[in-house]
Image (cartoon, rainbow, N blue to C red; front, side, top):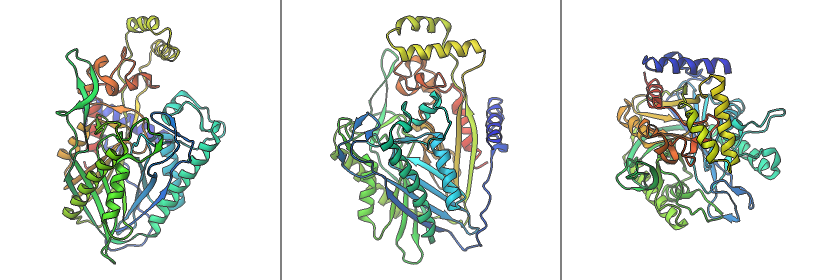
Length: 485
């Protein structure tokens, strides 16, 4: 299975590089479940509290939590079509989860609940936790694994965190199982409303260097898209899945209280405004270059931003239109993104001298030297595109990693659907996927898209030895387009 998946990614990468468009051979529809034929769509939803105990570290910035401002949850929404196909969309109030964790979770959920497909998305709250995979006996904790998991300390060395992590995995399975058991005939609707809770955070100065600030003229995603389900039996809402693009970084980094940041406040606002036990689940959009505003200020500001987003979701629900289909279509397009070329020998030699007091940087430079000596290019990035389509009315595009807003805006204006929704931070991937324009800046690309000798750039320290290559944008668009080709 792994060999087949890798070959599919290589096929897609090769065809993209040759300008042949999307690799249709990599489009693998899921097998229809054996459930009996039904009339119309059915929907279910459930949630579980996953708040970590007092004393466990908040992931970013790292600090020991002393309590809870507002709890963290995992939420699952499930759709079943007339043929019995089922897809579960799970969202977690977590900063992230790597490929190893998401691969494990998705397979476990499918095995233990019988759903045909499951996607796991993270809200990216910076006042929460990273979720990691379950340790496997004999598995070496390599640098690539540590990067994927977002930690350099194996969870086997942290018993309390291992216990919490295991409990979250189980709760995700239980949440999907409950959503499946509670599924009932429903009217599914899609809609959209304008809203803005943040600003573009990339500013290029007179010196050509890109730094982080409030760019009020920069590109953002000024809307929320929603998918909702209402019970045919009671007329009450079962769930609303909503998306917006902005880093949840309004909660100050000095706060030692666990929080879901503005997405959690939005959920609370929606729940208070709707009848019954409606589940409101948040998906993070393409926010790699967008911060919520004001940055790292107060919990009250996070509450205000969440209220604003929640009100927009309610407006979108009021304007939403029923989808006209009773069948689901979901696809995964596996591919690879090439990594930028290795730094020059001259630059590496200069940095060896300048960085002699920084052992981690010297270690990374030595890896670059070894990779150059091997005669092979830097390793590409795994990149899986996922799509859920409801006729011509709705399309959810789910992507790994943190994407710049241009990707979501391109989907919105290009996809042949009435309503689109784009998730990032889905089914794995740590780090940024910048625009070609940002990546082309090289050392001046800033935190999200910079390259050596800019050591503050995020991807400089990755096991890939650099960020994605210019040209990745075309590959990404080709893979997304293949969802509806």
